[in-house]
Image 1 (tube, chains in turn brown, orange, blue):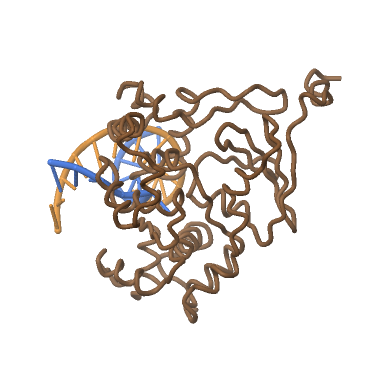
Image 2 (cartoon, rainbow, N blue to C red):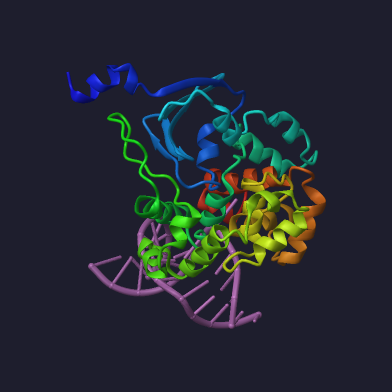
Length: 307
DNA sequence: ACCCAGGGATTTT
DNA sequence: AAAATCCATGGG
């Protein structure tokens, strides 16, 4: 018997496991739709880190199997992260009736959800995201965690994993240390944000309680944070349902679907978004983004099929 | 409006 | 093999 198997047989080394009911939850679309950067697909499972837990998730028809290390008696943090209490049908019913493009996106990405992420990890990750492709963002975040995160308790059946580095851990580093994680010109912005959180001048709890416009203004005041990144934090961390991060993919989708390919400017697109998508515009954005990125081939993106 | 700030991945030559 | 382009952008 291998040492690993011997250890897994030892009840004191058993992973914490549970099963959570979840209807129409598309784990793959959700964890691979660019809202988070720390999940890896492996043998039908998704492995990642949430807070101080290593997590392995697998969906079946009626729910989600979860294994964690270290074990925990309480699963509310996972239910919250995955937003299992959200009634997806209610969200989808709020979408504009007769929008065939959005309908097609929803059909193609059935069960895509929005997560509820830690504000610091979310802000830091999206500061690192500017003009980077998702593959590269993942790489930078990985390096950052390995070098400056806390190692999680070892388990023979679990790959080495680290927490996302705290604001204090980042603030204690030099700009050069951060640049060594391949983040380039984003390093000073990340460092500044970490210092602001570490010294208490930026507190997420009060921020999330502010009216959306005020919270957005406070975020945009940070170096390296514009409307797009501020909206990512509002939507992915604070759950502001009508926050609508507009990146190049979403802009491409909007122009193609609603402006017949016309080069509408940002203000025009913004006005359309606010009037069109309704109270869960953030969800609509996530469907359009994932649909554009995954389900439309390069040629079709130039000349979309008629609906 | 324009241009610049890493650098890896992807696409084109 | 080498070169050009792209990228969940913001700031000057």
